[in-house]
Image (cartoon, rainbow, N blue to C red; front, side, top):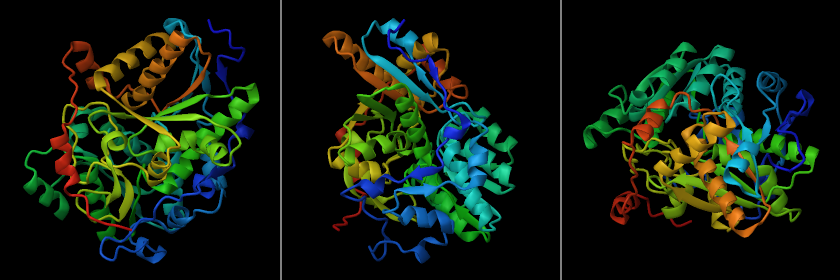
Amino acid sequence: MSKFKVPYKIYLDESEIPSSWYNVRADMKNKPAPLIHPATLKPLTFEEMRPIFCDELIRQELDETTAYIPIPEEILNFYKMYRPSPLTHAVFLEELLDTPAHIFYKFEGNNTSGSHKLNSAIAQAYYAKKQGLKGVTTETGAGQWGTALAMACSFFRLECKVYMVRVSYEQKPFRREVMRTYGASVTPSPSMDTAIGRKINAEHPNTTGSLGCAISEAVEVATSTEGYRYVLGSVLNQVLLHQSVIGLETKAACKKYGIKPDIIIGCAGGGSNLGGLISPFMGEKLRGEADYRFIAVEPASCPSFTRGKFAYDFCDTGKVCPMAKMYTLGHDFIPSANHAGGLRYHGMSSILSQLYHDGLMEARAVEQTSVFEAAEMFARVEGILPAPESSHAIRVAIDEALKCKETGEEKTIIIGLTGTGYFDMLAYEKYNNGTMTDYIPTDDDLAKGFAAIPNVNL
């Protein structure tokens, strides 16, 4: 057992749930580049965003100066159903690895949706209801975001239309059924229900889909249906803002027991979990108050940070969304169908992209068989079956802990454990049966996606 003298699980009191979200942009010297209109190449205005997003969410999206934004009481009351979430000392994993490193994980799967996504879903549903809307549309990949939004919309009695990446729709029927149980309609994407879906199907017959495709369909339906708006589960500034509740609680727990993290690790698909976990700590680094190593972990089959281009690109395959400056593989990029670990988006949050570009964080790409090896190692000793997405962070945390074993360094590592993997058993089955394979796109594969990136020099 670890000799690090803190409780096995660190619980905060209900009164210690953060009362405000933290906006890391307020402390960034180099602000993330703004969303731009694809026709004018000018920064999008509030009025131009109104047909797509809820009004208050647009204000949060554009606000880069207010450090702390109060959390409405209705959202705080909902948070109390499952927050604060525990910061757990992984003493059994440490013992298995025989490492001097101290490993902690912030567990976000302790709610019905099974992941951290509910932190933003309830906020976005609240603002939609407050605006008097009838419903919202969205996309989902592995299904965590769609599940969380369906739950949040049910709570506020909003209609919810979800476009689910086709390969996930087929591989994860139980997560789909949770969404339907909460009243959402779920459509495999690309579908034949939208003009953009029909176009994508014509251009890419038998495609397994991508988040970029699903986003295009969801936006088309939102902008053509009265009383609807589109909501997104990652990437956008507003989403990272809502998810900062993760990092704020983690920081409070560390302060409570005198824990000083050396390395903070999170999985990276679009950036919601990673951004939420690291933001308050990154704020300290930006202000010169403390220093940390931040590691973003992504799949080798969808390597936006490690092999992508830092450029303005469309956020969706159908090119109906604004353009964002981000690390991207190109809006036409579709991950291999054998990729089972989630984190399938072609781009990355503009906030995280700027921080990475400025050298304030690291990125690492890992292969999925090694990810599931780490997931099973973790599950067998820590008693939680981790989501495949979370397991990317676990993989690198294990690697870092083993480096500490080699050097004798006593480092403290914090992992973002985004949720549970109980709806991902088909992927676990493939790993256990030995049929899971690793796919790493070649330079030629990536070049096809890069070729579609617009030539925007701003």
